[in-house]
Length: 87
Image 1 (cartoon, one colour):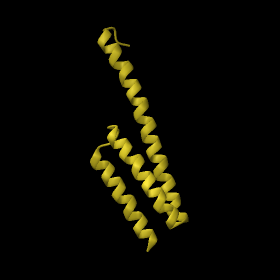
Image 2: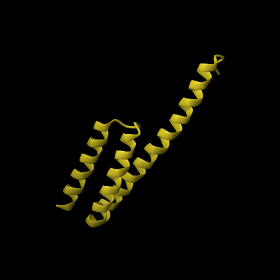
Image 3: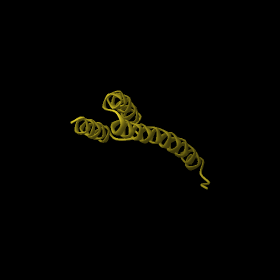
Image 4: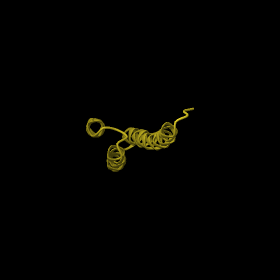
């Protein structure tokens, strides 16, 4: 544990941010898993799930948890997966 006051504060702040980032990432991964299950089950339901998952991914990118390019890449791959499953 640090002795300097500013270092103590940085530890507290980084723990708080780490917790928030883990929550947002977990929510994103859960949404992606739900989308994968929806694709396997039903294409119509998967379409609705894609928009919900895209919103969660955008939310993670806007909070700075993931990079915006990574968010766009994930959304593109999900859309491609849905298109492939529909055919």
